[in-house]
Image 1 (cartoon, rainbow, N blue to C red):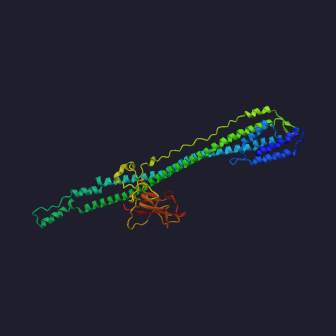
Image 2 (image 1 turned 120 degrees about the vertical axis):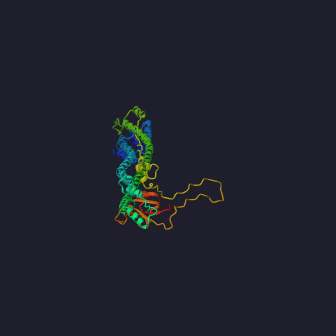
Image 3 (image 1 turned 60 degrees about the vertical axis):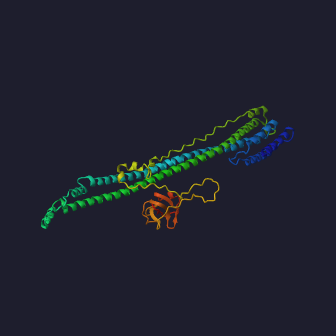
Length: 476
């Protein structure tokens, strides 16, 4: 309506001038131009800079003027053309370019999820996997040494334990012949003490040597047991890091894909409107060019041939296709390297096959939960007066004097918790909590080991405070 009002106002002086009336003064076109400019600039799209709300409606009004033979003021047509070419169409192009850049940004976000996952995977390989390999080699070398000591003590002819066994089995039994009197019996024993049967010095030497060899074997066994715990703990941490990376990738990629899909859906609707508007603007410019082709100096209006408008009526607009890009597929996040982990059926065969008879019981990786398990919702059944039989499982039974005991430290000898000197791996069969002093996380059920970190427990109960993990053991 605003455009119609302005154009109609501009047409009235033309009719007066052509019928012998007074032509408008130089000030009148300027006023009309200012009025039109104000109306057009107020009439903008909310979703794009300096764009008409309805170019198609304006086109309809101009086509009505063409059919009626009315001619707007030359300066007014010039202003309309200038606003379209210098303001409206560049503004529309800026909006389209911004939408295209937003599309590229959304695609980059999808790829960024893949890139960050691969970066994290490489960092895990360079740190945790290397730690696992080192711990594996250290433990395997220790067990081989333990195995050699064990075999030496039992089978090597030069070992004290083998010699002691041979000595004890080869000693002549003490049997005083029948009929010996006291003196003869004493003499028999004195003679026997000089032989293997009662060689005190030799048997003590062999026994002492065997005892020392067995102590050495026990020390090696204790060393290997510590190495085994360190290896299995490092393996479980490695597994947690890889699984966390895969979960983060799943979350990131699905969210980025959803964001791109949403953007494309909204942009498609806008593109349809932009194409209609652009086609209308091109036709309006065509009509303006016809009106501006020749000027009547008398009344400052167009002097044109109406047949020239036929080109505008037949004008078509072919928009350029919009490229919404191709979403990057989620990269592979493999967990095959930790498929056989502590607690799995294939772990011992994979890691300990050459010394399986010498290992301790494997401590499985923790399958921690943030809450106690609950039963599933009961199925719908006819009403009954009896109480339902399904109940939530009771918490793990605790010893009568069960207490929370420190089992791990977030950081060893942290400045705010310098007396905490444990590693960050808690070994526990029961409940584990994370915190300090009187402030703790909700406990997690653990049957094996768990990493004492904010990431694993999902909360930081005390910022900037060194924290610890405490275990309350259950009955086994």
